[in-house]
Length: 211
Picture 1 (spheres, one colour):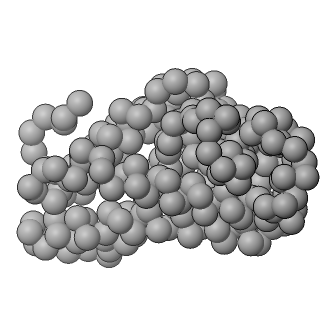
Picture 2 (cartoon, helix red, strand yellow):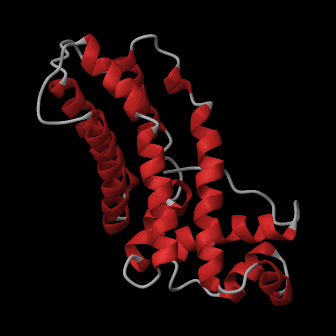
């Protein structure tokens, strides 16, 4: 998921400043390469303040994943893709919205929890689980619209609303990986274009694809 905007480290409670700093620095450097000192420096707080709020870097990782889930949930709840009356159009509008917010530098639009879980899934299960809760929880927000679209169109097959919702996240996260590998945000947008085509084909939707 993505993408809350950066906030000034001078504003807000020290704990929130640390979480915001972790969000930005880890997306830029990765979890392993990010030190407590890096986060304190970006948040403009002391190391003592860090350990007052978090017992370890791993504890911060869990809290950062939870903070990411909280802030991105609010971001997506008010996004414009909820507006169409037709549920399939809402699903397609979601894909278009995800493409539209792939702007700026790579760390600005890539996903914190996707970045962390790739590094720590085998070594930090608490962080892995917090990242998974965020990713799967966001996917679940798409299920009702997908299921409604299935019923309205009498769709059958060996797939479910939940499985397609998860697939959208696989494409998005994979697009972020390709964008990083190629140092090219266009590769992530390209992946969303293919996702749009796939969903239209799956639902036998005729007509031109909305850009």
